[in-house]
Every structure is written in C-alpha cells, then in structure tokens.
Amino acid sequence: MLKVSNLRKEFASVVAVDGASLEVKRGELFGLLGPNGAGKTTTIRAVLNIIQPDSGEITFDGKPFTREMWNIIGYLPEERGLYRKSKVINTILYFASLKGISGAQAKPLAYHWLDRFGLKEAGTRKVEELSKGNQQKIQLIASILHKPQLLILDEPFSGLDPVNQILLKDILLELRRQNTAIIFSTHQMDQVEKMCDNICLINRGKPVLSGALVDVKSRYGTNSVRLEFDGDGSFLKSLPNIKRADVYQNYAELELVEIQRTGELLGKLDARLNLRKFEIVEPSLNSIFINVVGGVLEPEQPQLPAASVPVSQPMDPRVRKQLLSVAISFVALAVFLVLGVMKPNFGFLPSVIMLVGGLFSTFKYLQAKGQVDRERRSKLQGGSS
Image (cartoon, rainbow, N blue to C red; front, side, top):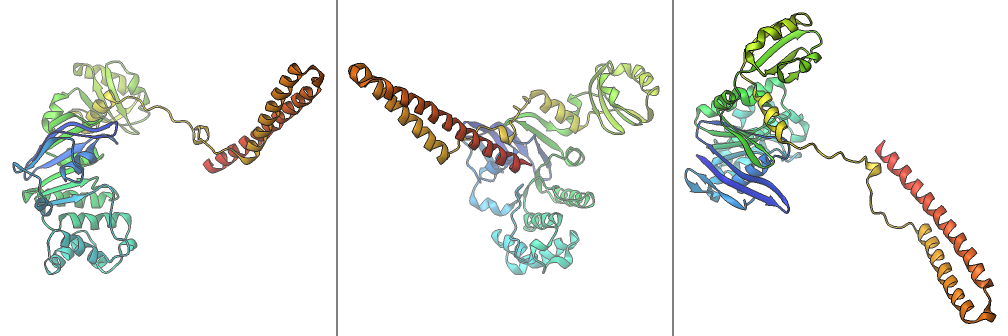
C-alpha cells in the first residue's frame, strides 16, 4: 500500500527527517513512534504531500502520489482544526464534501458515526459547545467517514478518557479487519503494544528501531522482571544485578544483568516488600522506548530564567540625555586641553572646570542607568510571578 524509502527533509540548518523508511500494508496497524521533535509529524506531512521532501521516494501501490489519492486517505492532524461556530453535522458534511461525497450520501454516514461515538443528539449543536474530547471525536469522524484505504492519525487518543480510548481502539481494529492500512503516531506505548503489528521508532530524524513488534521485543531478550508490591520500592535501582529499573508507586519493571539470578533477587525483596506479583516477562515497549531513546539523546542545555535572558532594549531617553552630556563635556575638555598647550596665556582653568563637569555628567549618567535597570528588573519579576 504505502512505501517510504530514504526520506529526507531539512529546514534551514535543521535536519527534521534523515533516511526514514517504512512500509505499511493493507489491513495493518503501524505505529510511528518517537520523542517530541523526533520528526514524526514531518514524516507524516511528507507522506501526505503537504510538504515536499528534499529526497526519497513515496509510493502508493507502487505509484507516485497524485492529487486524486487525497480521496482515499484519511488524516487526523495533531493540531485540531474545526470550525467552532459551525454546527456539528454541517462540519462533518463539509469535510465529507472535500472528499467528493455528496450531502445526501454523507448525512446518514455522519449520524451513524455520531451514534457510534455516543453523540447522536449533538448533531445540531455548535462545535464550541462540545468538550475537548467530544470535539476530538468529531474530527475522528471527519477522517474516517469517507472509508479511506489509508488512515493516518497523529495522536488520536489525545483528549479521550479511558472509556472512549477503548471505543476508538475497537473502531481502529474494526477498520483494520476491513483491510484499511492505518498509521498512528502516539506517546501512549500501551496502546501501540496492544494494537500494532509493526512499528518504527524515530529519534532526531533517524529511524533507530523498526520491524514487527514481536521481533522488536525478542531482540531485547527476556531479562525483564515485573513486580507488583506494597511498600517503598525506591531501593530497587541500587540493587546488584539490576541493569535498569522503572519504579512506580506499587509497580516496577526491572532489567537484570543475569536472569539466572532471580532467586537471589527474590531473597532481597522478601525482606523489604510485600510482593503481590513477580514474573519474568518480555520487556514492555515503554521500557524499550526509554532504553533506546534515553541512550542516544543528549541532555538539553539548561535555560536561563526569563528575567536573566539578555534582551536588546532601546536606550531610555533619560540615559541617552545623560550620555550625550558626558560626551559633550569630554569633547570640550579635549578642546580646552589642546588650547591650553598651544596658547600658554589661555591657561588650564577652563580644562579643570570641564573635567569637573565631565565627572559630574558621568555620575548623573550612571545614576540614570542604574534607575532604568532597576525599573526593568522590577517589571520582569512582576511579569514572571
């Protein structure tokens, strides 16, 4: 269905995508993963021909992208875009018309999906009257109403409560059974783990992990232990034979150096925790994500507080006036010094007077500058509180 080969996109001096390749077949749920700023959305926009890649190849069923293919694609962008003053049903019918579906065809389909999402009575309400989660459902309906062959969803679970996340999961699995190719990008690793056939993990624009989910997990072995317990598990990270530990309130996933030494680990735990569950498991996708991304990301540079960031400011008129006075005083001083040297009868009294005047002007300048700096700091502190 969709094949992307060696995709590259650069913005100014930033390489957003560098050598990304993926293949999505009909009837497949594909997870496109990565930390914030990894290049996922840029990849999606290049696939949809919203932006042009610098190099690489994108084909649908072996053919280059054409405008006619828009009508076989459904897209839910990360940035939501609904007409807030419009009625819900009119919004859905408008998006359907963009896909070439007439109002007569789209209306029964719209009410079918509104009913599926528990919004049957919301058709005549304005979009702005709905909650954020229900607005998300409307945009989802707009992306699937025309029965796309390829469905691309960027953070589809955002804004949905657990009940509606389950509903969306059931609908996506239903669409997959209808032979729809589905790509979705999300930070919710548990959803990917439950639903996806294949994944591609992108970091800093480059694919760092890809393949069938079962194969990806097998690559990371079975050196993981999952615990459920009562007590304080903060000490788990400091135990010997622990390579990595993800510790939560009453749950932990540990990666061991040697899985054969689980008996030794159990002995250390029995004395300090009330264990409710202890099992050797495949590593979760969440732990693999952290392991792969955490191992290659460089720490971010600390940012200065807003009040400490140097900002170019126009010179205050009070400071400018005093600075001009300083300049005039010392220019006059230089002139009088030259006259005093060249004409002995001129004397140096005028130079002494101008020196005193210049020093006084300098004092007034520093006083004015200090006052202006204090006023600006006060404003910055007030704005950040």
